[in-house]
Image (cartoon, rainbow, N blue to C red; front, side, top):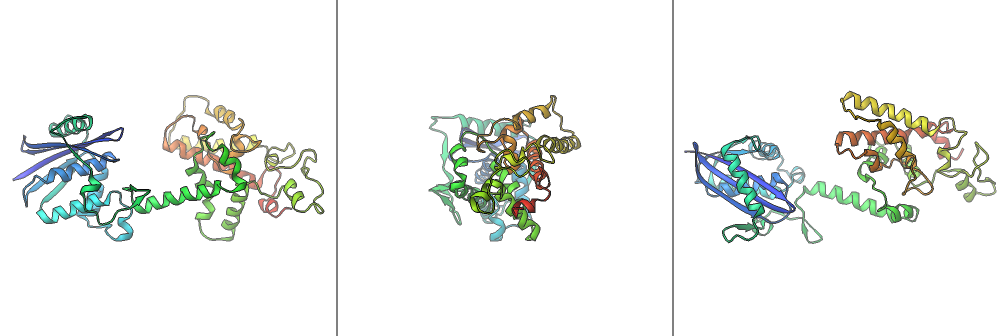
Length: 384
């Protein structure tokens, strides 16, 4: 006897529901739904629905499982069919690994012959639509004596659990540790006295810190070479505004550097913000921005990404506005540091566009190494 099982999962506002339907030929011979407590993604709920539905299947039965989750399908082939990624190092990259261990154990115990298929969601498929309706009814149910509510982290015998502040971490542990370390490093950085302005104004301006840190620490994550070591030192000192400008050199050695005036215009005090806007600079900041914009436009044209208004003018306007995270600076000063201000995304919620804006910011950041009157960034680093 060949059974067909179709499953679905739904979630909304931390309410979760699963539904499954078992069919023989065109007849529904079993169905069920449950409300699931906890925070889950839809693909995890579909996996739970598969496990719960299989529990009513007889031993050694052949079951064709239909799911609309590509994630479940991919992991099924990697973990079960190919039997890969079970080493400690690799399995820690898999989210909700306990569910997969549970499924693998049940398959071995009950000797099911399972075949997984991909089905398009909301395509008018009878069994799939039934499962969808069942999962949504469980999701929306509030008080129903006939509805079973399951809290999985209390019911499953996990091989290991990872908790953080008494909260079960279902993410892949290695990925969670990476994120945790990023949060910790950011917190430690903001706690420094020289980052006081960032700390006090962090909530006033939305910054994409994930993309910003990737730009600033790019050389650090590359190969260990003299150039990359220098680039990393330059980027960090540039971010912290401790490049050897005249005012800083005057404070360090007033006998050698008698004045804090700009060595180019000899008029204004040379601060970190001034060196990028000095009117005696070899290259103006507007030239740098325009050159970076041409690169951005070419990249967007290559992928046929169109914006139906003059976004060049919009970016220029935003970049020239006063910054809330750089003291006495503008948003283009943030870009020179490698900071990606979320306003530059122009309210466009597209990952590809956001990545290209981050690349635009990086182009602005790396220009000053050989511009703004500084013939070589090494000269500035060495105080020449």
